[in-house]
Image (cartoon, rainbow, N blue to C red):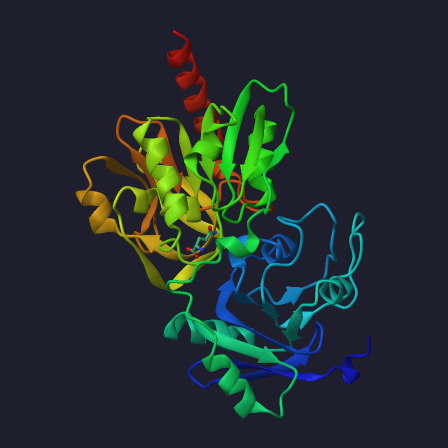
Length: 373
Ligand SMILES: NC(=O)CC[C@H](N)C(=O)O
């Protein structure tokens, strides 16, 4: 595609600020909460992460598309971000095992994308002014219409989105003869979490977001998992109920990101919307149990309340984000229940936190021994 023929496009923020660029996706309009990711690699994993459903993504990395797309490197069945904003878009790519270029992939998945935006200025603007809704469009001559459309976009706060990305029917992953069985509640699960569980010898049954504890227990699992996902954790009452039932029975439970927030809420710990979330692959976290630092992959706009956590006699803070001291991990005292706000399965990205999957499996094995003896 010739650079000169590309259509003009714009980003309109909820406070009226406008940034201009050029279309790289389909022509049209997309809305959502605007957020930015600072990762220098992994655009395909970001675009397909269900946790980003309903969000317009600004890529802080200046080059997007240069290594094309690979059919294996997806975190779900398709693009989940609602729109893309970037600086330089590569219409050509270079990579031995690529399956195609990013532009065609955007067309296939109907994504509205804008390049040639001053993303350094835009990222700095969002950083200073906080998360807000935005609209991106190739319809640059109808700003008043866009403003009206933008005013209709719901706030991320209080928004339930797990139902939009969760599986409709339960499904199985792994070898059915595996030694360990896990029931996973899908409130927006990333494929690489399942790969990490299967890699460690688990046979996993994945359940829809609104399943009950009884449904998850019917598989007769050795452990339970609650996934990452989009939106506000607060309205996810069914998932919180599932967590409460698992906790009540003292069964092994692991939660990642949205799952972590659900486990906190099940313990009466409130959650809140952050000024800006954490989205990138170099977030420093301290493990308070080992004293070690971890470089982690993160993607969240909500967090759990530190005061509530500290005041809760059943819960202990295990991990802290070193940039802003927000709670990055918890465990329940005397139980094999733990969760982290970040992504130990990150792919690509830092692998420092993969040990958390080993700990989950260890908890499950220990619990199995106890129930047998
Ligand atoms: N990756 C996730 O699970 C994100 C959780 C939640 N939607 C948040 O933004 O905080």
